[in-house]
Length: 321
Image 1 (spheres, helix red, strand yellow):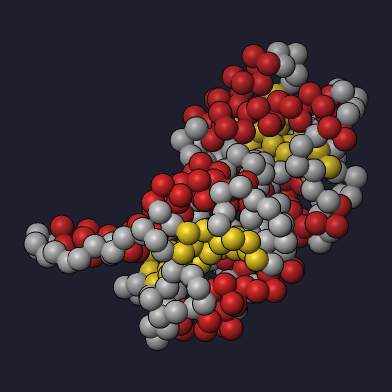
Image 2 (cartoon, one colour; image 1 turned 60 degrees about the vertical axis):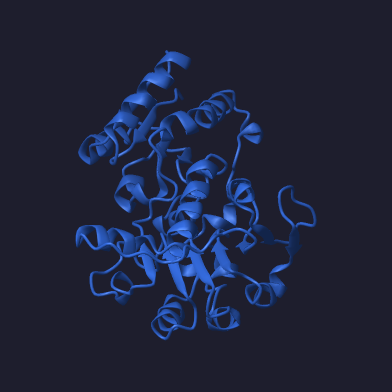
């Protein structure tokens, strides 16, 4: 059976063109449809053996229309959403893990600096033509506790190091370059009490659901900040909202939420000590260029029937509804 590839990218036409050109140059004889249009994707997927898309853009409708599908290459790190779509067990799933370090690292640092220096107040003052000065808090000598240690957290650590931050990683690993200290997840509350900034990066799974709960939040100091760029449900959002409203922690930078888009009535929008970003942590203006080497490697391995060599294979039990 000859392979046919569908690349569905509804967000960025430039990326659609980059995928089409990249695969066309590297694998000129491979039939590829790259589109941002759902109607076109639903037609093309009927012939596709390979589907390339962000996990959040893959729907039940798309899966149901793909009788020949053998492999899904997610353009995202997270693939947990695919478990509910009824993906057949015979379909191999691979993720985009490993490419998001630069953009995630920069967002984490942006949120840290913005919270510490109260940058939202600066912008509000500019809109009101108000000249107001205050002492600027520094990240120098502060402690960042990063929950979850992997490629992304290592990228965050590399960007924090020049700012003079001490770095503690929550992980079962015993040695990671760039961190001053490592601690297992069982000591999360203890480490949270030491954090000036608690950065949540750990992937979502049943084991990490509400990992940062009311008890962890209660362990944090009133002058500490929380940054969540992982998944919304890793943090108990109700408990976090209450802690923020009551001033039990200083503030939060949140890129992910339990329900997305974040509802218009959520109090998080209007809390003065919260910065909300719309799940943009993994995005970049060179996303296609970042992931093309991984995509091409996996495509070549797939076409050679060398599935064992494919990067970022997702375990079968992670794909069960």
